[in-house]
Length: 121
Image 1 (spheres, rainbow, N blue to C red):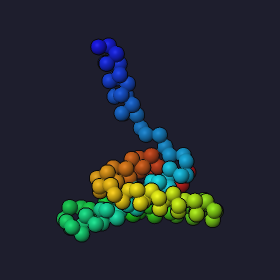
Image 2 (cartoon, rainbow, N blue to C red):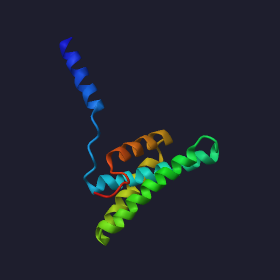
Image 3 (cartoon, rainbow, N blue to C red):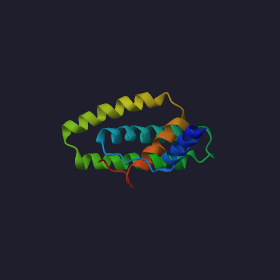
Image 4 (cartoon, rainbow, N blue to C red):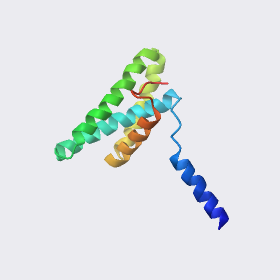
């Protein structure tokens, strides 16, 4: 019983700890794909139900994606930009089959782990 309480306490402590900041540019590029996909799926949901607030979420995620894209242009050379695009495209394709809720949850996790506004590490 004591072991169970200790495990629960450890899990609870971990749940309240802030997420580690993203320090790898490849992980940030995967977040870019999450932001873009969340924006696209939120806009599609807005088309289906214009009163549900999805348009605001679409704009938010699009702004986050544009911030990362802008910092890529400042920090990456051409070769790294090509690598980033390959990673982004692969991740976006994988995310496309997931639900809007799953993708927005992933985008929100990324947002919590990147600076505000998001920039490439």
